[in-house]
Length: 104
Image (cartoon, rainbow, N blue to C red):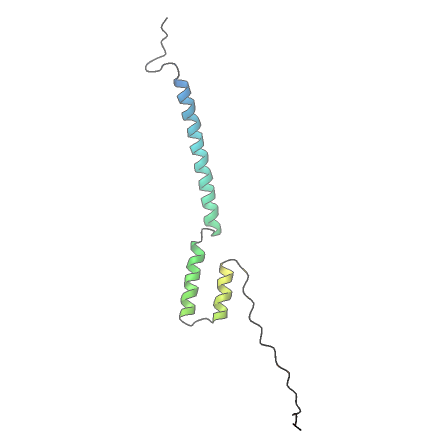
């Protein structure tokens, strides 16, 4: 008994067609997820390109002497998303005795 399945289609092609259909939808979902993630990262500047350009400009300004070391460190910390460093505290003053001591 011979079944005729149509031109070029035999038994079992539905399995391959099913796999192709699943693969198609997997590719569609992966593309959508990558597009959404790509837009999210670029919108918030998380790719690092924007902050590295700003740090490069900041380094150039510091090298030319346009800003002080403290300004450079503070602004660089802000650009990197950290907390600006606290300025160093002045050295403690040594107590001086206003009356001279005499040797006996």
